[in-house]
Length: 242
Image (cartoon, rainbow, N blue to C red; front, top):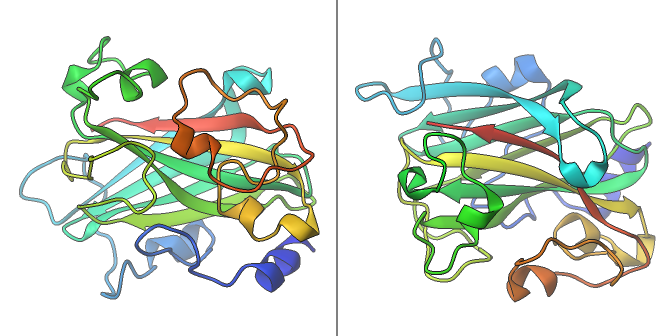
């Protein structure tokens, strides 16, 4: 039912990434087209390996602290595909609230070596640090409505260069093979018809002023979308290191 609602309210490809992959199952994604050029991914290789035409990297999805839960999310995973044309993500979320609207946010860290705990994953503090030494950028990836089973799929593609609607100033996607990628799912609460499709395409869409927005989030994020009655929280995330 919710996929039908989504298709009615949100035309395909209206997100702010450069291109969006079709929502396919895990098997279909392996044969999906990326950008306009069709190709089939070869055997997985480690992201960042030189001399390879493409790389595939899969990570577990974990509960975000704001969700009040801990550990990995059963039945969920995030896969990053990197080719000479850019990077694509296929994010399978589970354990969501049926009928809630969710958005996926893509954090690109071009210089993970500048993060405080390197080689451990970068933190939100690194991403939002003054002067942006990690050369990070945050952009919209995709949006969806959770099914009756509490599942949602997100897919998107970033090409090297400017990230449309990026939260941080003067930072592009520059390190195709060596960037660290974080993916964060934002729960916008129950679907509010009069606030669609904005709820599915913005960070703030449908969210009340009482929502626990993380400290230090830039004004560009907090002003992104029309506020609403729902309390919004960050609920799941995945990290893929080079």
